[in-house]
Length: 309
Image (tube, rainbow, N blue to C red; front, side, top):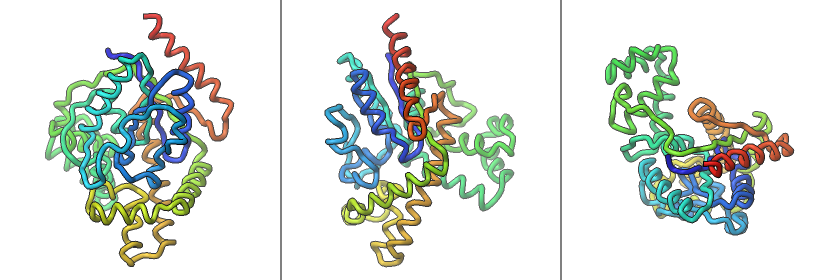
């Protein structure tokens, strides 16, 4: 198995970037971005991309790697991240993979076989909407028609698992029942940041307000003029909601409220993904900043395990 990688995940607006830089300094690490939209050049404010000042000399990989006119898949991310990690490890440093796109991180951690062009989150949202419009039995029947072997092992009531099976097949082109058993491709320690739900939502609302004040509207306008409204890059929360405003069909207040609402819903999905799909060690550095010492001890002991081999 390749060497150690540290992963930092969790919902938006919970402090992942600050923690990643702090740990990179403590453990001689370099950051590998695992946010599906921070890979785009020019999408800085709306993705909360760390500025050069915030990076504080820490080397970052996979930021600003493609133009917003381009499509970018999880398969492309996985390959680029593997290359960056190998380079970091070769130089004796610790790769720190940071982001809120859990599927990207898990695809890397487990070296999942991947294909397809669209981000899996879009398809998942489509299935979740279909579940609302129909019911669990309808969604299960969809799986049963494509992969009866998988459907036989998943009860209709377990809609989360049904959606997962459909998503994996959509992404890889391989039936869920025929997927190879996934084993970790790295010795990965996964740190998850979270905080009390109401506090998190307040942080999200405040972040959106600050983004607008910092120039989010001209940033979105530029991307819209460059890439057009149907670009994959403009599916990002904080960007897609402003398009109606820029086109004159919604007020700024409506757009901002929708960004805040969609960001809160996304944070909830992020928490669910990390809790159910990844072996995550959770910390609340917002309410309990003193727990950083416990986190530091966890990472220190984990690093010593590699040194003992």
